[in-house]
Picture 1 (tube, one colour):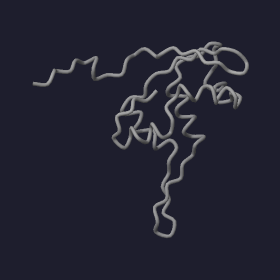
Picture 2 (cartoon, helix red, strand yellow; picture 1 turned 135 degrees about the horizontal axis):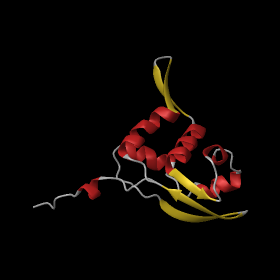
Picture 3 (cartoon, one colour; picture 1 turned 120 degrees about the horizontal axis):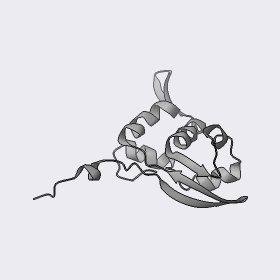
Picture 4 (cartoon, helix red, strand yellow; picture 1 turned 180 degrees about the horizontal axis):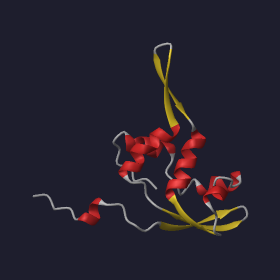
Length: 120
């Protein structure tokens, strides 16, 4: 007989996970929360659009929109303290270090398609 799940087994935790990353400018602490099932489903509306070009349905992916969604949804706080507006204006070198903590586009698409990879 299968073991019964508890409420904690079924819910995303309230606490964001603390991470320390090395940037070319020094250490940065980042608190990252997991995406809920609903956030994953809503994600596509933020950065994927479908156009019917000559009868063919063609997806258009806005990768800038993807990273904006992930940064604003998954990052709870940083040290040094950065506002959302500041996070959206980080230097490319900082973004490269930060992206290792955040769900990749492929992870998100796999999760939406029914994969079991944990995100964020």
